[in-house]
Image 1: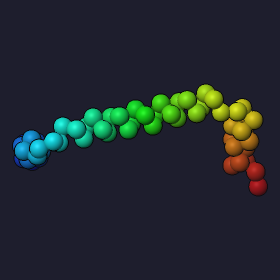
Image 2: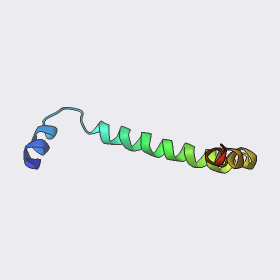
Image 3: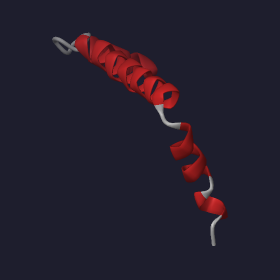
Length: 55
């Protein structure tokens, strides 16, 4: 089954760009998330962390 899928994917012209695009999107998302976590205000993080405990 995997051999069939691999042979079929190799026959598609231009398919090699999709893994590059996927990796770029994945890397960009986590880089932006990493940046947001370290630049977020501590008060905001503390306030948001208390939301599940508020009733």
